[in-house]
Image (cartoon, rainbow over all chains, first blue to last red):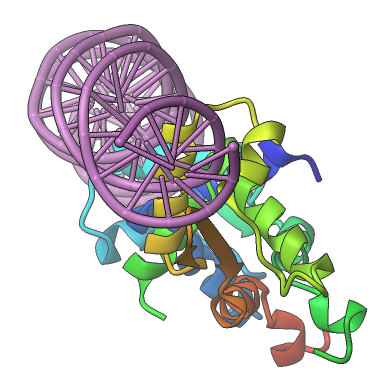
Length: 104
Length: 104
DNA sequence: AAAACGATTCGACAGATATAGAAGTATAGA
DNA sequence: TCTATACTTCTATATCTGTCGAATCGTTTT
């Protein structure tokens, strides 16, 4: 993955409210068996202390960084985690020094 | 780990140059057997197209997020990865839905 | 002691960001 | 069809950020 895209991903997670937003979606994704792991904006607005326009803006940023995907269903916006990308980023972060230099 | 601290870590990695800086340090850390995995600012200045004051500033941000530790040795500043924190963040990012919901 | 070197601090500034309020759009329900 | 709901768009603003040049500091070399 290229540096600019990676930085963009981190930037999307660099704001407390946006990170919390992301974690809420991830949580719904992990626990949501029946619901299919979905999460809509109104659910979130209650927990976070920010207005709807701001949430809308944040969601767009998360989607723009490919961290989530969105889908309009009726009047709701459904958010889902982009599982693959998240896994990729997670791997990239972790050092593998110990594998290369087993003695240290 | 608390949300604010986590957001701060991501913010530290959210700028291309700073991320590259971090990766350079990580690289030195991974390959640096003889050197002890250290890395000084002057080494970096060559690769990145930014001035010394900016690098100094970026390093402080990385250190402030606990991603790296620094140590003054003579006129050099030595940077090292905070291996433990990085591993922690990496883990936090990864979803564990599959473990919880093995059927899906 | 003087010069060179590596890094830091300060001040400035253009550009980005988070947020809100007001108004708008589209869908759902009565 | 009217109203309510869920979300978006637009606009404005206060704050934050990345970067630089100039000056400075501490260490090493000559």
